[in-house]
Length: 294
Image 1 (cartoon, rainbow, N blue to C red):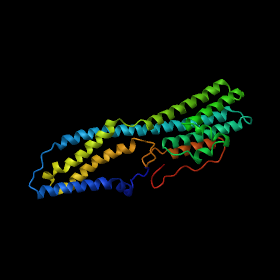
Image 2 (image 1 turned 180 degrees about the horizontal axis):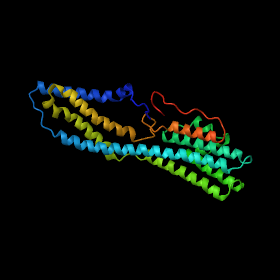
Image 3 (image 1 turned 180 degrees about the vertical axis):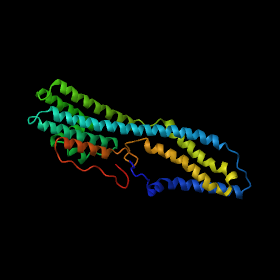
Image 4 (image 1 turned 90 degrees about the vertical axis):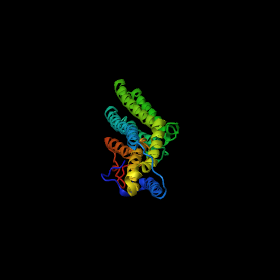
């Protein structure tokens, strides 16, 4: 997630120089052709085309932003649920008999959120997850098709062990299970966003119509703008391409790009809060790198 109040000019140039160059070359070609060859550009209803396309792109961008914002809301719920689980484990499980189990539940929750982050970003599960697990547990839950869900299931089994050992009663178990349900619901919402793309009409048609409009712009404007057509048409076309790109950037909030929801930073927040809840030393929060919070 880009956190700088002013975007990096280098990053902006890297994203727009290719379409900007293509637009400018096409606009120059149309302008030169208009003055060299004896042909008149047809009158095109560009205002109607542009207005209709702007509405289409607006709906698409709003849909993409809703997906991005829902992903951020679900991770906010994950942070709150993780804190609630750690607090319940700390308060319900008695010392010293259940101290190890209390610590294990907290550590497994930290491993769980990092495993979920790796799953959503299609990254391999590595040391960020395994270092919070016992050696004998690393090959069990992580071997499942959904490692994060496997870790959550095993946390539920440990809560049931605490109930069978008499360390918590059924009411306390139900309260902790309710937190696990909240965690599972948040994970399900994230997986739904990740695995369900925008409908084809929202992905293909706006792209097609935007490029068609960019091709038609200099043809319809050259008679009015004359030699200023390359500048005016390029700027107008770039505006439409920029709105199209905004939708592409936001449609997948877990894509491990600079426009991503900052999963690493939120997992570190959970790690810090949970480790401090059991009195362990905690790492520093994640800092932005070149204006990007990962």
